[in-house]
Image (tube, rainbow over all chains, first blue to last red):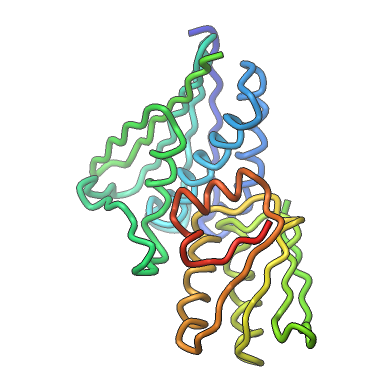
Length: 138
Length: 105
């Protein structure tokens, strides 16, 4: 690993969503720094957006919430860890969406898993961590 | 950042023409949903989304489209979306939303 960057957001639950733009822009700047191409940066931007949206929708207990993002920059890959302090969820409950049924939810994790090269989700009663990696293979 | 939604009724084609400018994400999707719901409350016809200025859409935004589509389908109406960026088109394909929403180049 060459460098790491931490981004920590602490806010009232109703204001948290306002920071999504900031998170996406920061993530795209960091991805750009290690030389990932536009397509990969778009994938990462969508994935970080989904991970944080997941926290805003499910991972905040009470009025105030935290999102902790940790970027690990390697010459050939970017690993992003996104953590909340919510109640966690059962990973087994994540299903592949069936669009014909027109379900409005359950797309987020599926999108992350499709767009990133490696995804690990660790969820306990103290919170959830989504760790995702994009490999630069060029 | 943020979202502005231009909308008007196209009498020639008998559909709502909707042009989202900006991001449809967890911050703006509630407002986006309300705008679309108000339109179909006024008149249940097809919704044509001009996606030229749509910068970003996430799963909550896709969720809004699914929810509106569900209501439109009851009246045999549909959602058409055009001129979307390649990254957004990919998201539609990934989630198979392209099977239920008409995508025009």
